[in-house]
Image (cartoon, rainbow, N blue to C red; front, side):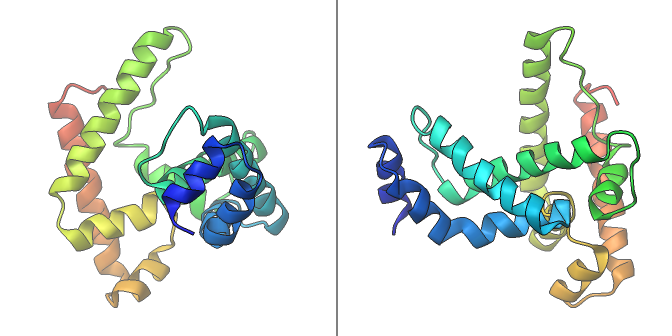
Length: 190
C-alpha cells in the first residue's frame, strides 16, 4: 500500500493503519531497533511502541515521508531504552562506541533549566547538521549516516562499500573534524 493511503488510514483512525504500517515497514523498524538494542524482545517492544507513537501523532502530524518518520520514532525509542538499560554502566557495544565517537563534536544541550532555549538550540543544531550532511560527498555522507544514524559497525560499513576498515575510520574521523569546525564556526559551544 502507498504511504499516502496508510497515512489516510491513520487520519481515518482505522486500525488497519497499524497492520499496513507493520506489513510495509516492520522489518525496517525492527532492523533499526536491533542495531541499537541487540536484543530481540526489546527490539520487538520498541517497534510496537513505534506503532503506538505513530498512532498518537498522526494526526495531527502528516509526515512527508512515512518511512523516515517511522525510522526516527524507532531510533529515538530505541535510544531511550538503551540509555535506560545503560545509565549506570556503559558497555562498549556498537551504540556506545558510536555515541562516544560523537561526544567531541556534538554539544550536550541542557534544556532542562530553560526549555525554550533548549528547543532553539536543538533546532539550530538540526539545521547545522542538515547543512553539514548536504555538502558531504555522497559516499562520505552515507558512511557517516550508517555509523551514527543506523549504528553500523566499521566492519559492516567497509563491507557494504567494499573499502578497507581504515578508510572508513579515516572518513569518519575527517567528517567529525569537519562537523566540529562547522559547529565552532556557527558558535555552538562544545
